[in-house]
Length: 394
Image (cartoon, rainbow, N blue to C red; front, side, top):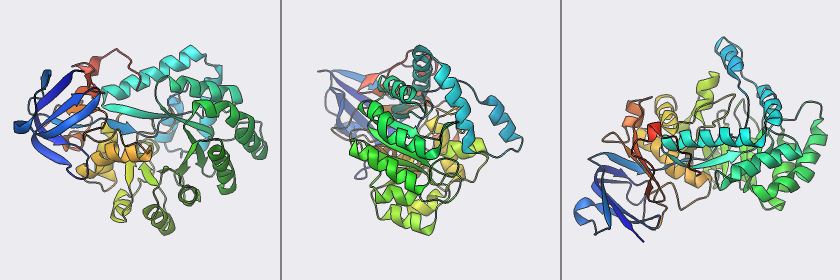
């Protein structure tokens, strides 16, 4: 085993609630894990040394909500929306058509390119959903492709009801043949509980079938308006309720009294000109909050967690510290992971060296490429990740 000492860290943000920030810090990575963190003056010996040059170091971002296996382009939809047409769930069907026509190699190459974009911007763990196949074989192959890129795969056969199929018939397909084909490739089951997609009863039925098949639940909830999704997520012990844009007082109370994380996706509001979630309300109520990109071709085509951090600070009432915590520690909680999202002994040595003295610069300098170096499992990927052509599966 080779131990790597990273010192010269001006500010180390660990995301460890017991010791979140250490100034003039150092970190030792060994065998892919964090072996030690603390003041640089107390750092132990190691086999090699990396000088951070006074920069800030944060944990690798954990993106707990992304739709990366798809084909096609929805530029025209975005342009129309920017001209005043409101967003609805119906645009998903155009991506379904393109995805069904695409070959496996095309889908895999495109998804891997998006993962590489994420990695270049500091995301070292990503969840990937299906949901653009909506047939047994297309959902299965989407998840099989996703398993080559991440351990965090989600069966989202219940994205929308495909054209030419009744809702009742499609729910039977999702909970039967489709689930049986997809469960071997998935860790999670998800439902888009929303008007134009699936109602509360359908959501419960699908999630319960997924749980019975050994999958863990998560829910798309309250994106387009108030609905039952958040309460169902809490009722069934879902790891996260995602979007949470239109919350009732009962929703907030349920989240605060449960272990369900509220995952906020400000890229969707930015791209649809919709109201942003009220993160301040959730945090003040004691809810665990995560940030994720919702990277998808229709409503949030961004792969940048730094951009989402900046939006959360500017538009959602979060402090820079709260936003970075949500993009790291919060994302890990939304995936029920304790090995990523923070930098403490025993955690995976995933970390980002920012070309800035503080994580505050992620919001202070929005749109500026501040990622200087990315370490994944203790390995430095490349010094200049911005021009890195390498695709490294997460």
